[in-house]
Length: 176
Image (cartoon, rainbow, N blue to C red; front, side, top):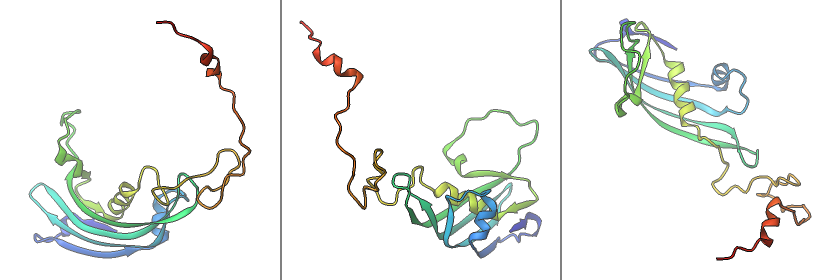
């Protein structure tokens, strides 16, 4: 969904919409590790300001993810607040390097003509993803030897005394 800035009333515009799984799939370029478990519901308010557009809203939904430890699929509920400031792209004579302030982290740029709401919502979903998705905080993962899911079964590996290259150091005596 694209919104033209020149069509925004001075008091702003409220947008309510929901997106299904096909929408996210079209934005993720065949990334099968992230799918929607239920549609994303978005309430968004676009408020024009003197030199920017303020976006405030809420995003709810659920993602189907793969646990990074046990490789089982699980559902992650989304309940995110959207609070962004959109600025027009800086001019070519703007300084190349600037120092970021904390308030700049919630600032993005757009072309000054249209706002691509779909991309902004998708970006907020991706920012809500954990770095290492876990089905539960105490996930035991998979045994590196036999491949057993340690959340569901016990390890079938034979306990083998492994020889380490550092075992030779045990015989070294240090005199004080």
